[in-house]
Image (cartoon, rainbow, N blue to C red; front, side):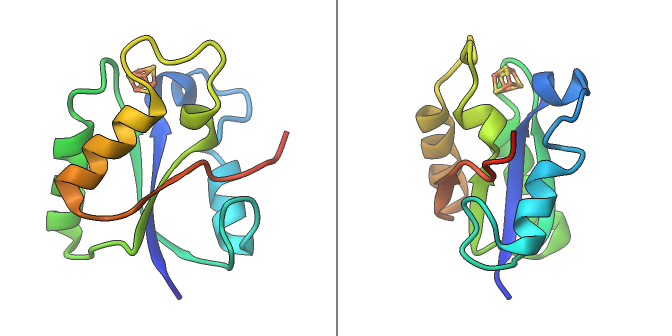
Length: 114
Ligand code: SF4
């Protein structure tokens, strides 16, 4: 089973109300739904925190401390499909930053649940 890290928008996760950090991303990962082709094993659930400058270093630290290099990093649907969008960077920019830092392929989005 593939190991994955999932990155969510901390600002959105903090607002609660059925946030992906509570169940949507993890459900899609467990069932192999949405952007997941098959069930996967999440080994990290990272929060981006405004203005996003710690994301790359935190991703690197998670990999170092867990001693697990994920097969893929998934940017949550709340990061990829945000309306209005993140005021600091686009999802593509975050994905590029993460790929440069970790060398791991970044997938845009996690689930299609309402
Ligand atoms: S920087 Fe953008 S993506 Fe990151 S937590 Fe803030 S609003 Fe969300």
